[in-house]
Amino acid sequence: MHYVLEPAPELDLVAGIEEPDAGLLPKYMQGVKLPPDEAATVKRVVVETPMDEYPDHFMTLHGPVVSRRFIEALSRNGIDNFDGYHARLICPNIEIESYFVWNVVGRIACIDHGRAEYTTYKEKIARIQSLAIDESRTHGAKLFRLDEAPAVLLVAHDVRKAFASLTGVVLTEAEGWSDDHWF
Image (tube, rainbow, N blue to C red; front, side, top):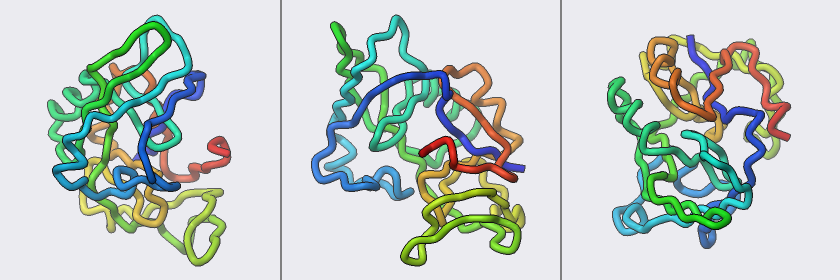
């Protein structure tokens, strides 16, 4: 069983990663490692929402941002197919250094096309009305991007405890999941 990893919906956090020429899907949202010169660059994350404490996980227009605590929790639980690119949160009245632009490395094509319901545009999945996973095609992966829809991050049932103490994280059962709330 797998879960879709999403930011907590109650977070009303407006932020963006300053990324020249990022396009609609930056490299770190495609499931591939960045070249060393790009990975070494500190990413600027401009946060418009003042908060007393920022969550361990939140989404920006160009991808997920996570805390050091988030990275450490994954590592402690044997999850290693990700990169964290140092980020500086530029917040109202403060700058915070202990965050990362998070890149899940690896994509797996595992949609059960016979059971899933989705809409395509130019032969690519544009919207998912009801997700269905062919578990036999995940090969026991703990964390990965859905190849057919790379913005969707999937987490295996046996490692969901790694996310339990982290703020800003919601894990929704993948079977039947819809992206309606994203739009």
